[in-house]
Amino acid sequence: MKTIKEVFSEKFKGTPLMFIAPGRINLIGEHTDYNEGFVMPAAINYHITFAIAPNGTDSFNFYAVDYNETASFDLSSIKAGDSWVNYLMGVIDGFSDLRARGVDCVFGSTIPVGAGLSSSAALCCGFGFAINDIFKLGLDRLQLAKIGQYSEHEFAGVQCGIMDQFASLHGKKNSVLLLDCRSLEYETVAANLGDYRILLIDTKVKHSLASTEYNDRRASCEAGVKILKINSLRDATRTMLDQHQDELGEEVYVKCSYVVDEIARTKKAAELLKSGDIEKFGSLLYETHWGLSKQYDVSCEELDVLVSLAEEQKDLVVGARMMGGGFGGCTINLVHHSKVDFIKGYVHEEYFATFRKEPDFYLVNLSDGVHKE
Image (cartoon, rainbow, N blue to C red):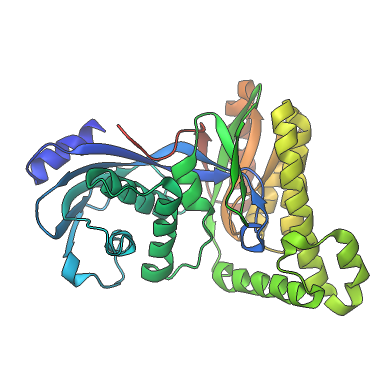
């Protein structure tokens, strides 16, 4: 934070206000968001720091510390392009006729790039929160989350759900959110992890299948909804799927079965977390992974190997699964606090021997959502 503030003093005049916007993880509830199910995200201690001050003009001036790049636009020249400044333009456009004025802004991030921890959501939500605060625009956190989602949709071309933005803005320290993706109602649940820590292991791969396969999975879900004559898979049961198995066909039946099971798992996981039963909670993570791998078919060899390695040490790693859209990125692991270094060494050796790649490790704490410092 001190560095970001110092850089602001070098680049711009005035004293900035400081804001923190975290990345996020999702403990369980994968590929359920666009099926109006439940998810269990949390904000984490990897974040973007902003130093921002109003400049009394209609110009927005930025310096991205991590890229050593500057960018500017003004209210009359907002137009989607292909730079990181797109996200920030989209946020200002999302405020619509509310009177957001120009600012000078320096930002830097500790969120690992490409690990699936939603750095773009943190960028949009942190900047939107700051603009809302500085100009007293009066929007609540849900409205700011929707502006962040708008920016992703309209200026970055990413048709994401709202989970990432919601988690970045609503996160609470040492807690997870049980978010209903239909109503957007949520419950803050204390993360009673006992002797276990959350360790992310990054495969350091991202296979090109992700975007097209994501669209195919959505199409399978939509086909199932149409055949079952329901509003979303949130309304389906396994009995209903079994009764229409022939009509659905094998592909759609298997994909829809995963989603229906995952929605049920996520609700069950919340109850287990409340009661502090981390062993049973962790077993649900393993179930989710193999559902994603064998039913939903969005895993890859690297992710499966990491989860298999975790299972070999199940007395130390009570739960593990791939996290995110699939085909690369991180696994999330619940590791006994006294054995984190052992697991890192064990996984590093085995993974490197198999793929000749070195995984990255991120030990995460659950943090508060976007806030002013």
